Length: 287
Image (cartoon, rainbow, N blue to C red; front, top):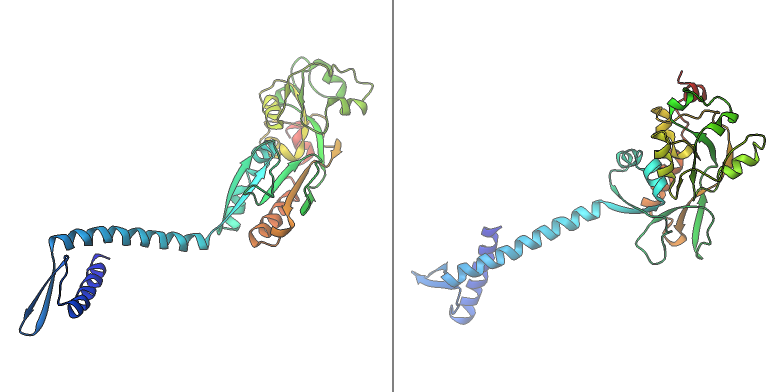
């Protein structure tokens, strides 16, 4: 690069000499037997060092532009529990399938404003009024069931039937669309104290509390697939439960045809339709 810069300076200097008798503060020009000899003065060397740094910055910027053109950044906003419990364990699969797309994941309980924020897609929970021009794609229906740590299947009050719940602490997820009151309406003969028990405003915290043995939580099977597969949680009464349609994928119509958004949408719903690896019998009894 330096040799290129000096050559440019020299070529310019010779042109300058021809036009102005060689007057230049950065070049020392001598004529010997009809040939021009051009060398840098001290000022010229300092000038060359300055412009060499400038050219280096231009070269780096040019390389960065080329790198940016090869990679798309997909900005995804999600609710915290879905991001933590479902997305994070699967993002590596998306990256492996689409190495030219980098995912930027933001998580908060507040829905993203797709019209004003730098967000490509928003994963939301619950029914909300969407702005005009938004495509809302519902997720598959979720199943909500009681879940607990495996050791609660044993002990002085083992969880074997729904009646056994009266001996255990109920963990409440306050933002979940389905709560213990809804579950109790389908099991009216069971005596439950649904007025007490720890309360959390995020599902991932309720799930964590259940893993730690604090009690029995009522949560979506969608969010606990990893815990069930590793047997940190079990479904003591099986995998059939209340049905709810909670999550949606939200995209602006004006951006829906972008290749990166199309690829994300196809991958997301393919992953959501993947069957669980473990049978209900194994999840319940440990067999």
